[in-house]
Length: 394
Image (spheres, rainbow, N blue to C red):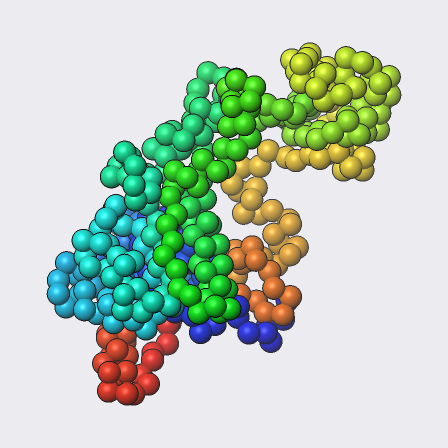
C-alpha cells in the first residue's frame, strides 16, 4: 500500500450523538475513510460503552474498538447552551448520525426535521431498535433482544440450546447499513444537491440477514434447525475428527464432493454413489454422510488432512480460538496490524478491511472524554468571528 492518494471522505464532517455499538461502528468507519467525526458525549459519563470493562490498559475494549479517529466534545443536550452548540455543529456538518433512545433527538429539538429545516442539504441518519412507527417502536432494543425477536437465536446454537452469536451481529448489521446509507446519500448529494433523512432499524437490518431461513419458512413451511457448525442446506459441512483434533470441511457442490472423496479421502467409488452423488441426496442422509466422512478423516493427522484438502481445492479451515486469530499468519503476512494511540498508551489494532491501493486509511487516536471540547468551542467562536481556528484531532 502507498500513502499518496486522497482519503475518500476527506473534507466531510460528521456529528455523532451515539453510544454503544451500532452508531459508533458506522462513524468509526467514516473516520477511517477520512471524515472528521465529532462525537457528542454526556458530561462526566460519556458514551456508556466507556464503562463496559477495563481490559485495554484500563480502557473498555468496545470503546477502543469503535471510537478511534474521533473528536470528543462534552455537551449537556438537556441544557439550552448544549443544544445551541449542537445546532451550530450540525449547521457546519455534512452528516448527523444518532442512535439514542426512540424519539430522544426529536425531544431535544435535534431531530431530522428540525436540523434539515436549518440546512436542507444535511444528511441525517437515525438508528433505532424497531423503527419510528409500529407497535414496537418504543421498545428498548439491545443486541441480544433483537437477535431473539428477529428469530436469529432460533437458528443459532445446538439442537438443544438456542444462543445469540458471539459478537453483536444485530448492532454490527445496523452500523454497516448506516455506513452504506451515509456514503450513498453523500454520493447522491454530490450529483443532485439533495440532503437526506434516513432511518436504519436494528430489527429490520437483522431481518434482512435472515433471508435464507425466512424463505425456507415461507415456501417450504419449515423451521431451519439449529445446526451448530453445520449447515441446513449443505452436506458435508461440519467439523470432522482427525487423529489429533478436528478439521472443518465445507463442500458447496457436487464437484467438491467428488474432489473430497476421490482426491482427499481415496474413495473414488463414492463419487457416483447414488446415495451421495448430489447435495440433495447427501442432505437427506446427513447423519449417514457425516458418519462416513468422519470415519475416513480419522485416519489422518490434522495438518496432513488440511494439506490434502488444500491441494484438492476442497474448502476447509481449522477451528481457531481468538488467540489463533490474533496470531494468524494471514494477518501477519498481509501486514494488517498497526499501533493506535489511546489515553492509556499505544494499542494494537487491525487496519480497516477496506484496502485502497493508493492510500492507507488512517487509524486515529481514541479520544478521552471531552478531549476536544475546548478546541471545538473555540473553533465555533472563531468561525462566528470569521476566523479559521480549527484544531487537530489528536
